[in-house]
Every structure is written in C-alpha cells, then in structure tokens.
Image (cartoon, rainbow over all chains, first blue to last red; front, side, top):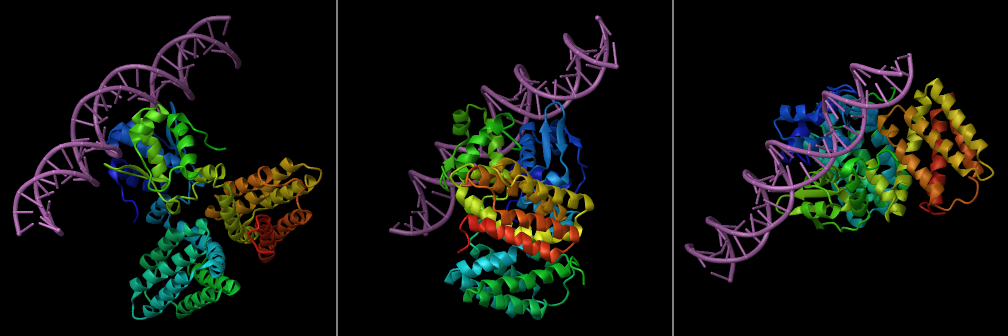
Length: 233
Length: 233
DNA sequence: TGTGATGAATAAGTCTGACTTTTTGTCCCC
DNA sequence: GGGGACAAAAAGTCAGACTTATTCATCACA
C-alpha cells in the first residue's frame, strides 16, 4: 500500500517493524544500533534514522549506555497506519482485526449521522453510485468488484462526516474490509441483507435523516462484529 | 507531557512540528535539509533524523532533487499523540478540540458498554473512587482536584473496555479535559448534573448494565458537545 | 512547431571515522 | 555495608566526501 520501503532506512523498517509488532522481541529486549546496522548491512546513520522512526511510533525507546529497548504493546501508537499494517500482516492479525472492528462499530454510526447532516450533493451521488456498484457485484462471485465499492462507500461516509479524525480512519476501514475478503472465510456472495442496508444508508444520508443513517449503519457494523464472533449469538 | 525534546533532534522537532501543524508552512512548501540544519545550528545527520520523524507522521514528504515538502493537512497522522499535542498548543486548537470531542462522543459510550461487561472488581473500585473524588471536589472552586479525578475516571473506563484502541485514547481524553479546564471558560464549579452522571455510570458498570452505562456516558459526551456549541440548541 | 533525447545541475541519500556525553556498573576505601 | 571515584559501554553528534535519483533546460530531429 501507501509507502513501501523508500530508501535504505525504509527497507530496514519493513523488516524490523513487523518483527517487533509480531512480538519477536519481547518487551524489554535490548537491541544495539551497531549490531543492527551490521545485520542489515547499512551504515549507522541509516540505522539511526530507522530507530528514530520506531521511537516516534513508541515501539522502542533509545537510551544512552543501554541501547534500544522494545516497549510494551500497551505503549505502541496503535493508530499509526504503518503499525496497523505491520500488525495486520503478522501473527497479531486476529486480535488487530477484532480491535479495529470494534472501533469501526463505534465510529461509523456516528460518522453516518454526521454525514446525513453535512454531505454535499456530490458526496450523496458518490454514495448511491457505490451502493449501486455493490448491488451489481453482489452475485456470482464478483468479490473483488464488490470490495472496491464497499471500501469506497465507507470512505465517502467517513469523509462526508466532516470530522477529520473520522476521515482519517478510511484507510483503516479499507484494510479491515480487504482483510475480511482476502484472508477470512468468504466463499459465498455477500449477505443480501448487508447489501440492502448499504443502499438504505445512502438513501437516509441523501434524505438528511441522521437518526436513520446512524441506526442502519449500526446494523451493518453489528453484522461485522457477528462475523468475528465478538457478539454473543 | 510525555516526551519533551530528548536530544538535539528532539529539540528541533519541538520547534518544527508545532510550526508545521500551525500552518506556518502552507501545503506544498519546500524546505531544504541543509538550510534547516543551519537554521537550527545542528549537523545534517541530526536534521535528517528529525525529518524522518516528521515524515513518519506524514507531515512532510522528502524527495530527491526536490527537498522536504509539507503535506496537506488531510494527510497528517492526526492520531499521533505528538501531533495532537502540537495542534492543541497552537492556532489549530479550537478545531482540534472540536474534532476530539466529537471523537470522544463516539468512542466513550461504546467503551462504557464494554467496560460494564469486562471490568474487573478492582477497576470497578477505582471507578467509584474516582466518581467520589469528583463529588468531593465539585464545589468551592477545586477545579484542579476535580480534573484529576475526571481524567482518571475516563481513563479507567477506556482501559476497562478491554479494547486496546479505546485504551490508547486515554491520553487524548486527558488532553481534552485538561484543555477545557485550563483554557476554555470554566469559572464556575462543574455542572452538578454531570457529576451525578459520572456516579451513575460507575454504578451501572459495577452492576454490569451495559445499556445503561452506554446511555449515561452518551449523556456526558452530549454535554461536552454542547459546551463547544457543536450541537444545535 | 512540437517532441524526444541528452546532459548538467541539484538536493537528498549514504558511508566513514573520529569525537563527545551520559549512564551504568564495579571496585575500592572508609 | 555504604558511598564515592573510576572505567567501560553505547548512544549522540559532527564534518566531509562521495553516490544517486530527479528535474529542468537545451538542442537536435522529425
């Protein structure tokens, strides 16, 4: 996705980041810059830049005379898109997917309510277009085409909410939806009820009915939670 | 708060970061590493490390033959605690405070519902302790004491939700609450209704009543929204 | 006139080696 | 056993030389 390891320090990050977030180095582990530089066959300057980035993500802490120590998971900047991507790509994937889906179910209904109030005519048009695209690809194993429109739909909602914090979760939601299609079990066509709900949300937003948009979106996210067995049956 | 400019590169960040997030450099502005290094009187290695960190926050983008270009606000990692702190300290403060309060109003009710299901006995005890502390400091201009317990209360709720994404918003909520007390108008004692709501939330969580905890917390956050005139009267 | 290739200028990227500073741990003396 | 001086270790800093990618301008050619 967005930023594949640009430059040497980026390449180092693409290896060290996933290793740390996967828990290969337990909290408190000590790494030494010089040793890492040798291991990755880069200069110390490059290694230091990589460590600085990991430090800004609160994955590690660098202290004189001690070294680079790995921080506890509870301190990580779990909203950093790169951290999210690393965790989704590694052993932490299931837990990460659950956390993010719970987050979605809190954010998206609120975003839909705001979108119903603030969406421009253009955004409403985009929304119905996405919903129609989902309908068109909902049968006959067109999962990829369905996914594209599903992602676009939720991205428009988040953007139309007018809240920058919500808007920046578009990438996260995209990752979750893509993950569900690509890695989880999804042999069959999407649930027709879910497709209908998306169409109805588009209608509610266009009509400016915030309460209805919020309620319908909550039903969508409840469905997502149930897929992961987060909700009791 | 947490990480005051450690090291030279940290000092540079504490100056450049706020400047960028305050909009002093319009999107597309081009900075040159060498010039910045001279301006801050540091070596290029140090300057490069600072740029790497800004880059990981998506505040800037570094390209060969071009320089370090400032990105549009819509690309910033607005969930990065350091970015949030910089924006809260600068001209962006009002908008940042509104965005965060809207975020709170989406997250905290959901977190309270989860807390009602997952909170340990110890966490329940902490919660009532915080609520009682709020009551004790609710009269007679003991705003600082009230604030401490208010922050602790919301932090416990977020932690008790059992969701790591929610838990990591504890610092953000703390900043918002502290900001309200310190910078916004708050001459009088806190609203008695709000104090009562906190006590009731603690009770609901202890009783395991998720729906009630969620509803009561939503009332708290609605109050916060109204204070900022986000909700129409 | 427009277009594509060539080349030069530029700023980031990289490497190396020497030096400084802080922190920790140890050893010795009281 | 406690406290202070000393030594070692690792990050932090700096300066300079070199490499590489990218952009822009120029020029030849169609």
